Length: 440
Image (cartoon, rainbow, N blue to C red; front, side):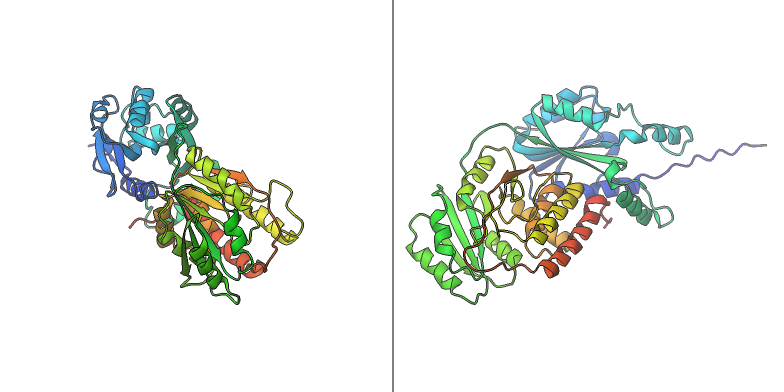
């Protein structure tokens, strides 16, 4: 009697296609290099990056790539297969621009025994020699070469189709287990950082609707920054906001001031229209109601100029705020949102809805990519900015501000209507952050 041996192998095609999709968020608008284990040469689809296929035991091709510097370097199946992790990280650092990002993707160490079990059953091809280094150990080694750890995420719990239902089952488990880093593929983001103060050009965007009584005082109080423009985007108002803004533009000698009449509606639209005509290397969003002291922009800009952060979020909920500055129900709502957002993004924030945010220019293209790709509607723009920064691996920090009560006009926010929109936005973005992207 002949013995029939069934040598069945589980295909990793879907796994690598999902992985390729996941990498896109780190590559928008960036000059990037993708270093891929030569054993995965035919599996990775990356239309954004220059690629090198590497034997991790022989890093010479990486050493000799050229004198060109990159904004992003990605390692796929490299770290766990090499014999000198420190050397690989050191070479990556030498080929990254200051503030460039290193993305290390590897197999989750939780699956080591399961992977070996599948190999024993001949359901999976044998891996080349791998160390399966835990993410915390990678982070410790990376810090010794001068990298700053940003965050780690994981994706793919069910990495195959399973007769057409695998994608749905995978999304279900990714959502249920999002806190436990159970994905088979992990993504660790590091920043090539050093203290290197550089005074950069600035754009201050001020959305203004019914702010006639605040604009002149606000502009007068903005510190006289070098190479700084102010963009006032005027919404349709019941007072003379637009006329006052144009008068300020013609009389002010300290800044280059641009005034535009907003073509759409809402604060978010005002911000996006301002971004499109901005020219600064650093962007600030400042509300026109003077609830945040404009003098505090000095500290916001200093954090960016010192390269301590890519994105600085203002927080109103650290210091005691001025009486009447915020309604009690809004305080509780803001604290709830900041807790939920911190859980999703992995970045601990104390106030997600503060209108003052300062960030590097390269985030602009990423914001528009985020909006177009995931079709999320944010009435204020705060979530779009924070979620985009976190999703694309930016370093986020906070600066505490003293929050003041309005002296003119009234808030443009509807607590319940806008609160409902934010909850809807949060739920959709929760799914985006914690599930694998659809395969095209």
